[in-house]
Image (cartoon, rainbow, N blue to C red; front, side, top):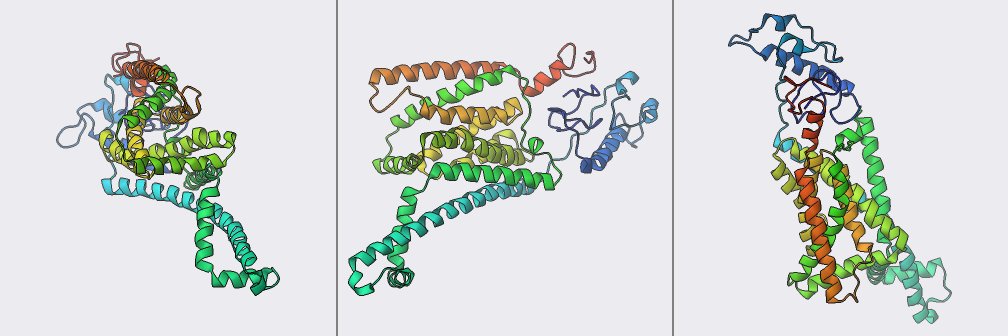
Length: 406
């Protein structure tokens, strides 16, 4: 990859230029606390470059060139060669898995905490109403209705009251509001955590600007994928019990207003899920594993987090596709856009319960054409790494040695 500032070639998997410290993907600089570490790595790479068995340089001029990791004025190509930095060592698999698990459980903790707050509030209101129903049936026994009467009834029928209150709370809780709140809470908490650690949140989750115009095709790809997956799932002979459970689970979204439901499903959920499962979990696994293995593990975690068997099936497929887009565009924006399009397609007025078989087949055929065309052009387009390298070398070769840097 060619650095925009010093025009030098570095490994594709590096975040910052080992020469000048500039990010390959945006205008940010390498964090200050990493400069000393990168400087040591840089010096080791220079002493090992073009060296003999005794570690001495074969090129006398090589030792005379001052090392400047903060600026790009010392262009080593003036001396007739292009410096290739030694690849950085990968973290251990155990450390990467631990880091990914830590972020997942943090996300789960915020989710459970916010849900518990909403459930507790709904249960308290419901418990009071249930106790009052007990009182109305036996008003001659308990006398006047007051707080002492409520406490007495609750002590006598606590198990029944709590059980009924929990069922009522589950059926009446506003899932959309809960999703919006825990999504915002998780996002804010993560930004604060990275700020305390003096790390740039956008860089940590790959929230980078995308130069590849093919990203415009990601939205129609996500919308068409929704219709195709639903069509395929309808062809699978699933037990009726599983289908009933799935419909019952997602019927809870109906407790909200339509606008809040759309914000929850099409905006809040896709953003926070991509930040956590692709931006944090996948990128941490990717540091120690190959892309296919990291994608498979993160997709499995993403699928299991959805719980219900039908959701697990399509979430795993979605997880693999989202990881592919993450690698293709080298940015979290690609999976976010696809996820938004996928979820938002639920609210498009193309299909409904009264749709005829002809309408369904036409919709599926159009979706297949859009999906195939979008996928074809995305695959034919250059990856973000190739795009960056071609842009900063005149001949587009990306090696930086025989092409003139722009």
